[in-house]
Image 1 (cartoon, one colour):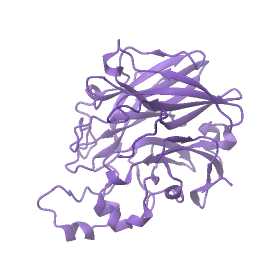
Image 2 (cartoon, helix red, strand yellow):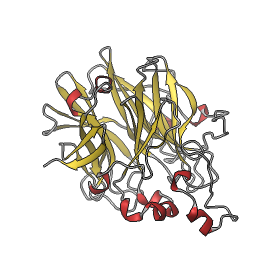
Image 3 (spheres, helix red, strand yellow):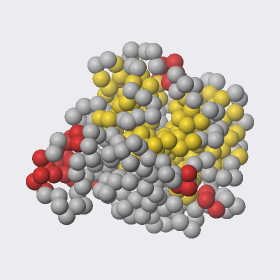
Length: 366
């Protein structure tokens, strides 16, 4: 991403928790005088009674000099409340190496003052010798830029097992540079400890065969172009994953900037059909995956027109309680995200989602 933030502190990656009549907003902010612009970041908060007018309360969770692994940047995650306690799952990186990421947990009794756990909840050190039956594992640093993606935690309580599943974005052991994947870990309690499981989506996981490698000297361009799009995994990385149980299936949504997608895949599916705002959509019968594309073009219709990035859904009719929405046949959704051209939040129902047995689409809320 090359667009630079304005002079005002940028705002990005919002998410919301509903709590006893109050909507609690969490989002990222940072500094504008650094390169890259996301070199330093922290989590801010806001509250609302109507999901339209917001009172911003400033930083909630900032980098900590006494926690080396979380001393450089704090970034996106998700928030939950259980038995009177707030749980904030977040991503972090050190000041020395902002590309080495880990996942942390902070708790609070009031949603304002947060206490970080001293050690990461999950990190690359937990990933050794864990792979799918087909041999796909966690790659550590990506092959393109050496970035150790381990970010954007999103937790789901499984309605069948009552266990907690933590999803996160990472890199998998693909030979291609398009190795973005979805990691997963499981715990008996919301606070953990979490046990890492084999990846749930990504190259060699989400398609019938990892049939091509655009970096290979043996790859003939005409042969690659002739491959069916369903056999290709085109994403360099995943961002802001959300997993929702609805209509007896698990649905994975995530974002990826167009510049981080395989151009051969874009040419095949129609580059004009994809934008930076496109929200990608994969499904699975099991919470642990594998998540596979649900159509020839695995996207949410209308998402490409919003101008947003990091799009996520909030069930409007159930105040964020996805467990109440699972038995519904129709959902009205509030759409959250941020305008990636000027770093503004979309948090006041600018867009809505309509999800029924006929499909899912995003439209402007006029």
